[in-house]
Amino acid sequence: MELMTLDRNRLEQLRNMSSEGHPEFLIEMIDLFLEEAERDLGVLKDSLFHHNADDVRFEAHALRASAMNLGAVRLGLLLRNLEEEASSGDLGDFKQIEAEYLRVKQVLGIERNHHA
Amino acid sequence: MMLLKGKHIFIVEDNIENRVVYKMVLTMQGAKITFERWGEGTLVLLKQAQRVDLIILDLMLTAGTSGFDIFDTIRSQPEYNAIPIIAVSASEPIYAMAVAQSKGFSGYIAKPIDDDLFPKQLARIIAGNKVWSIDGK
Image (cartoon, rainbow over all chains, first blue to last red; front, side):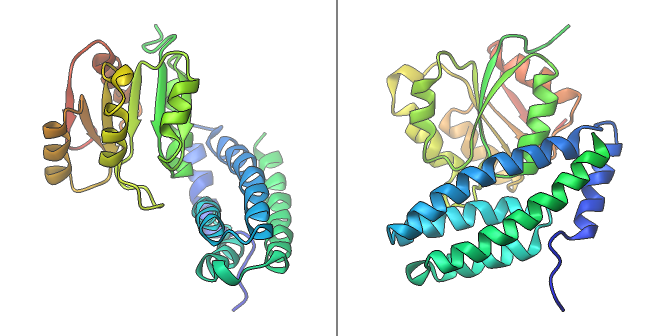
């Protein structure tokens, strides 16, 4: 089964948390994720460029945790693969991750506009 | 009345959902928050901060760092000896709370936090009290 860009069940959970007295919860979560992800991706790209396996592993892990928390399962899987093969990862892997991140960003942007 | 008006709270927490909860619950009470996600940059960020009134540590960070280790790192710097440090954690509280007490934490609050009570608990700790809460209450 092909993984979705965003897990709709997880998104529904987050929507429910927003409707339980904290209407801005989902927007805050999306904004924080996007802000940190842009920073993490920059560091990840730099670490891959310099073949720093430890930093690649760390940054991939960091971003994966947040991605999975928001239900970005395909992005999470790509990051897990990179985390596991950090020493052989290259900028080709990064392009895949970056492309998936842009898809996540687009879907989250639509979701954010619904709630704003 | 804002319970935490003007208070600067430094939080080491890697879970994005928890960070958002902290931000919403504490800024509503007037607190200023600095987040550190992985524990590794704690001392650098503390040095950059002008004044910190309270430090909150998660105990199990996914990068493998323990909140107890971060506690030791902070306390190894004499200039941070007076800042109260608490653990807010989903760890097994019987064990974790005992370790926190023996190390000299100012409190332990089990996750999930109680949104209404949490700012009051923090205000009490900043005022010099200790809070040991096994169920977030």
